[in-house]
Length: 155
Image (spheres, rainbow, N blue to C red):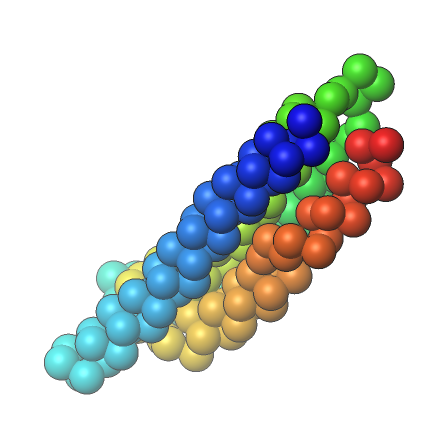
């Protein structure tokens, strides 16, 4: 039974890592797109006049802060212990929490990309990209954490 559960754990972990790697890949693609637009469209000034950018910038930063808190809340909610949970259910719950956390970590970079297209300002994109990279570092799946969580909660 433990061998089956370990196979399930490894399978779920590999899926979470692949999704996490694809999120990292999407961040790299965002950087490539921004640099391409900056290099080949040097007169790019965005779609919105410069006067409206200040309030929009605050909106995107506020959404990024909300993302940070939302990640903590969702992960905590998903990792609540179920009274009758068996090991497979716990592995599935851990996998769901990890995948959702990893995907939500991309949010600030996406807001930065949108802000770049609206304003033409790349500085804010890179700041929000750093926030996403930090969140990915914090929430990227780690097998030792999964095993520890399963050993403390699942027993």
